Amino acid sequence: MNTVDTLWVIVSAALVLFMTPGLALFYGGMVRSKNVLAVMMNNFAAMGVVTVLWIVVGATLAFGHDVGGGLIGDLSLSGLSHLGRSLPGFTAGGASPMAVLTFQLMFAIITAALISGGTTDRIKFPSFVVLISLWLFCVYIPLAHWVFSPEGWLATHGVLDFAGGTVVEINSGFSTLAIVLVLGRRRGWPGEAMVPHSVPLSLLGVGILWFGWFGFNAGSSLAMNSVAVSAFIATQAAAAAGLVGWLVFERITESYPTTLGAASGAVAGMVAITPCAGFVSPLAALIIGGLAGVVCALAVRLKFKLKYDDSLDVLGVHGVGGVLGMVMLGLFASRSINPAGRDGLMNGGGLHLIGSELMAVGVTIAMAFGVTFVLAKLVDMTMGLRVGPEEEFNGLDLSQHAESAYS
Amino acid sequence: MKLIVAVIKPFKVDDVKTVLKERGIDGMTLTEAQGFGRQRGHTEVYRGAEYEVDFVPKIRIEVLTDDDRADEIVTAIVESAQTGTIGDGKVWVQHVESVIRVRTGERGTDAL
Image (cartoon, rainbow over all chains, first blue to last red; front, side, top):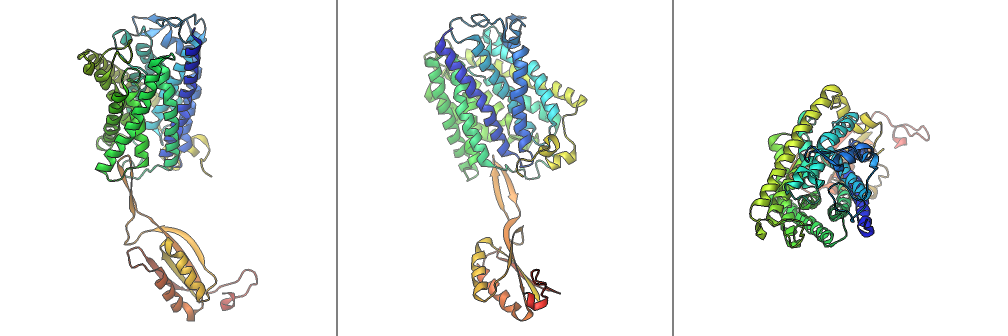
């Protein structure tokens, strides 16, 4: 075990955990004042439920000894025990296995929490908890094994994904789409104005996300080395370029640069750089982030045309930004930044890497959308996913939690 | 006795209050109100989605007075609240049957 690497990974784990309350503020500010606590509670519930499940059997299913040729982990590490000197497939001598599994726990938490951005204002709280629990085992953990475990079948097929463009971003985006299609639109949407009740809250939330994202990306090197530093600056570059990109797009198309647009652009940039950080140069990160700001600003308009109510744009920002990031990695990946990676199209690697990345994108979308759709149907038929019309009108803070955010 | 009700632009409240005090009117009730007439609301944009906000913030002023002074007060309010643009508001006058001062129980014009 390397103590410096271990220190970096546990500090990063704390940074990534902090992203979830940041996300809660980001989401909480964007909903109406009668639904603030409910959406924040979904985020906090993920911190509770996912942690319990992860420690007991989640971690071992994702990172235990491989079963089925890269499909899933075994139960040998249940309860975070028998960890040994390194996790299966990882080389010994780096960060402690316990630190790595704790760091990975925080990823599972925020991915589950991200889903709540699509289901706001109408999902029953107990049903949300049951649904993300089922989803953790049936969707998140298999994907985490396939991509993040060196023994997973996508990893062994040469797919690059530094910090979870597939497992976290594309997965949360398309899982959310599946759930909102089962759940239905909010009453009155899109005709009725559903205006963010506190943009300042959202801005603070994005500030916290930005801060935590350094742990998310740079921590994913699982070592304190030049790759971690490269991922760190790539994160800053992409967030900044995404912010600028979204604002420029707004200024040109709608004539007002908005604060929520600036915040959303930064998030879009960081989403797109998530798979790429640690594999691309700072200049490539600027291009990827800037492009993400524009593409995601366009993508959030889709729901009004196609009439699916992804309330806070989990698909438009995380799904689309994640796909964009994976494709960009196929272009800009460079072994000069990370010798353990591959070269993309722009660095003489030809189309091979883009091919791998597109396959991973396709597999993740099919898995996230397909399986989550079935799970959402299952929960809907048994417990019911949605609150009644009167509860929805009065707000979920009162109807689900017997509280008011502002009294 | 009359009740004069004026719905005016919020930034004109101080002007109206000053003028009324100059004319010796030393009581009024003020309420924050929202509404719309010919002035349209405004548009807000969140992530590219435009929302029409129909109701415009206004201030509602109520003044109780005896019959003789009603016209003078109405004129004072109209002149001090006027900007000449759409959205300046409205003033109307209602007949009041009785007024009672809570502290003393005085009735009618004595209570004003």
